[in-house]
Image (cartoon, helix red, strand yellow):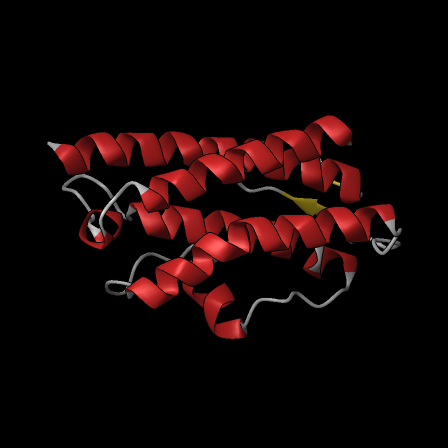
Length: 154
């Protein structure tokens, strides 16, 4: 899992830089032809990792129900986020992954409820498969963010 954790840390670092290098207005802008914005995609990857790793393992997430409900699959931005909310997401990019890695090596993820991913049809049967999928999911949303950055700057 070392490589998977390296990929997750690197992708999360890229998302942090995107937050730092773009205005609050650009992070919140939903360009024509898109259903969401940059900061929603970044919040979504944080929430998705927590749900796929912790919830499906029968464990509590450190995220609030409000945050989970704002960024979970099937949601879209319901207004602009404040700088304080964006800063929270930025911090959570690293703190959630650090905690997941720590918990993984402490064997916290003992149980796992299988889950079939709607977008790919793959069934996640254990924490290793879930975290590998999280890395793919983060990469998918990085691609969305790159497209959004291009659209926002035009």
